Amino acid sequence: MATAKVPKAVYEAELFRLQAELVTMQEWVRATGARVVVVFEGRDAAGKGGTIKRITEYLSPRVARIAALPAPTDRERGQWYFQRYVAHLPAAGEIVLFDRSWYNRAGVEKVMGFCTPEEHERFLQQAPVFEQLLVDEGILLRKYWFSVSDAEQLKRFRSRLDDPVRRWKLSPMDLESIARWEDYSRAKDEMFARTDTAHAPWFVVESDLKRNARLNMMAHLLSTVPYRSVPHEPVHLPERPPAAADYERPPRELFTQVPDHAARLAGDREADA
Image (cartoon, rainbow, N blue to C red):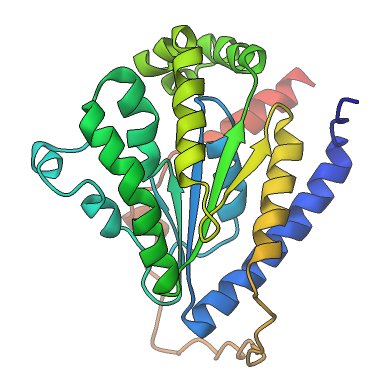
């Protein structure tokens, strides 16, 4: 039986409730010095970016950071593979969301030939050890795989072709992934077999329905973090003191104002009415 799409009104209400809980979790992280790492992986157009956007919408960028690393530099290619990811791990009181992560080596690098078979095998051996070190250090590590069907992925790619604000999301690598669907499937299956461990398991998010996927992932994350409401001092707005008799605001004409684009739009609308 197919899962029903969450109605928009229900989705928006539950999304806001979960976002409020995420703010509560953020305050717990900040107060306790906890460290949280959330890994987002999955095929292109699986919905990772949209989910990350909803998670961080009301969070402080000083607490919750997004790590979306570009292609490695020549110097980084000469480092230990995990080294550049270590630099982005959270300090005490921080949350880091990896929009793709060290698992690039198990996916795109493996399929596209950007790493050697020996490098790929070494990654699969070292990743569980690396993640064990993170967990032993006290970092709360959560790994999510966003699973999208080939038909839905193709539908999303097509919707981006003529969308001026999302066309940039279509890269040559995205288009190549269409022809290499089975190769990516094999790489993902091997990755899961080698890195789905007791200390750092993979959690699969079915993402053909974007609304459902976002709610499911956010609710699960909250259910796995032992946060609680943190007491805080009540905030009282002070009374504004009266203006000093010897201060006079400079005339607005002395400053370069931004053109009132909104006023023109409002005027155009009134003229059309």
